[in-house]
Image (cartoon, rainbow, N blue to C red; front, side, top):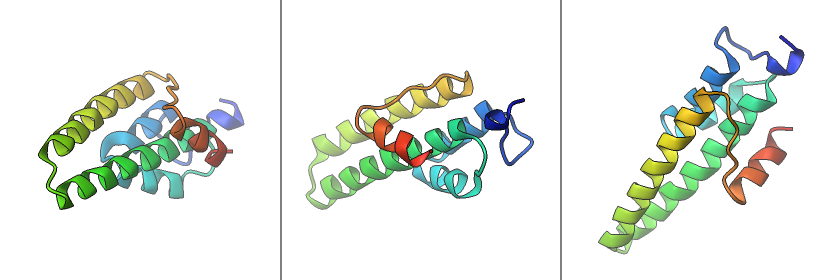
Length: 109
């Protein structure tokens, strides 16, 4: 393994990166705070944190404003994004969400 492929744990970098999506922004934050070596893992942890925290905020706002359709759309969109990111990351692929992916790339350096 090259230095960039190593992680702080015995898990492969694909598994560790996928774990960052498991419990949405919560595991993204935990993995981001604990990962020191792998840029791949830090990218996915940053993207998880930013994506799902943003979607959570939209959900809370739509709930506070009692906009049922917006809540339904946010939950559906978040579920679709979550499944795609979880599966593709576990396969070792890197999908960048527009705007958020660029910010996550900067945070992972």
